[in-house]
Length: 270
Image (cartoon, rainbow, N blue to C red; front, side):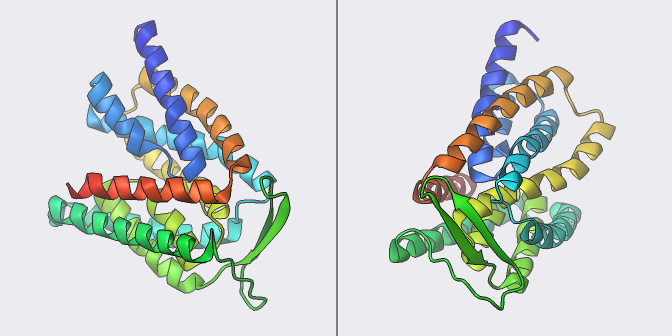
């Protein structure tokens, strides 16, 4: 790899890290097309590089969010179990269903979720946070932008687990990161603040990516130079994205995430 290519891949990794840290989606939606179209990397190697960078993003951001008390570990592990089961089944059944039909179903699902998030934000100002003393999972964090502690309760955990199973299945079928689905599930179904949803998603995606990384490594699909350059960039971008995410307004993060969902839905549908 020549120095110019290394710098360009590094820069791509920085952008990927910022996007991944801010929204809890891993950043593969941005990194994979750039590696394939921009640098001519084979698809399997691009996906493998993306999976390794997801681990880097999760490692760099999860520790910060956990230390600041923003990530909800109990919620994350509860949903991750169902997501993983769904992803395995999705991967096993991927070859038996028409790809174009699946993409359109997934696009409609994303668009509906984005509309629900937008309606909630418009109706309640930013987010309607419910505090239920009887809820099995409680949480709180200090919002640096608002300079106050925000308390919340996790609502409809069983419903969220069922939806997470579906999210994992779609992720396994289509090869997209589960964060784009997990974040709105936690925000809409569980009723947790958007910052908690993105921080918890950053913690969860690393757990899933580790298992996938071993599979790609065993098949020899990890390109050492491209992967190393991307990981270095992602680590730097993740640090920047985490600092931005902690200090940004919840409304700004929510608005940007809704736009991202609509763009992703349009890309998948058309």
